Image 1 (cartoon, rainbow, N blue to C red):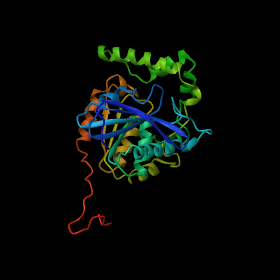
Image 2 (cartoon, rainbow, N blue to C red):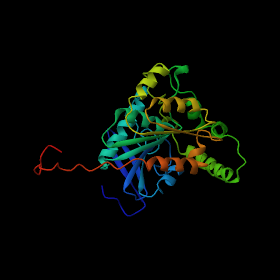
Image 3 (cartoon, one colour):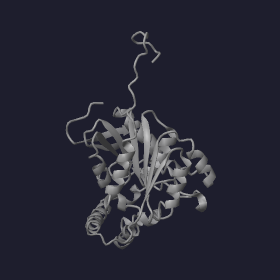
Image 4 (cartoon, helix red, strand yellow):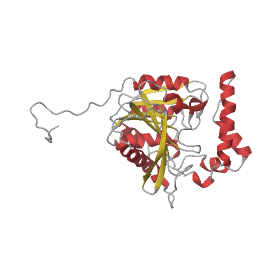
Length: 303
């Protein structure tokens, strides 16, 4: 599709009863699609705004249904949330004419990406998973712990402060401390406008898989380039979760960052993460445009 000259474009796409909000950041010719959960609109995540500054690329940021300004389905989808979100990404990509894109997601958005990579819709070229690799099955395949606490934090300021602090290891870096204070204020403001019922209990990736071996065997079928990134101090998406996923996917790259938790790579110190994503994107060649073979007539089905 033809890119607009303005640095930011936005709109909605109707998909199966939900008006999905999107924002395009940057004006490069190639596209990274990123879906995320949470209030504040699809252009909010700081790491995506920084990624959009990558020469030659733009970021199409999509807000997942069930959060913020999207319409929620009448029934809780349970284990079907992630497949639903992956389908939404593919539908929005098709509606906006994206036929050659990289998907990048963080946390819930990354889990969406693993489902998307297994579905392999037309146009998907690569996956970037940030703090969102499939969890190990040592605790079974039930919903991830902490969901009730995060939901309660919407109306409990003390609990919200605890949840925020639990995702961030100690630091003495003045730049990180300043950004942490800004992120805290933004986080608390966003909770004031968030309906607790707008936090779907999505559970874990690939809940039908019961053992680590089954997860590994499934991930081995992914046939696109994958970058797995995470924080060593992340207590939600643990280093071993990232390692397990990267070890299963043929040719995957793994980057783990010291002194980082579940959210600090996204808003507190995204520069190292963005550097690694840019190195990864540089290896993804554009999808060649189909051309007629020599001797084919115009309109031949043999392309």
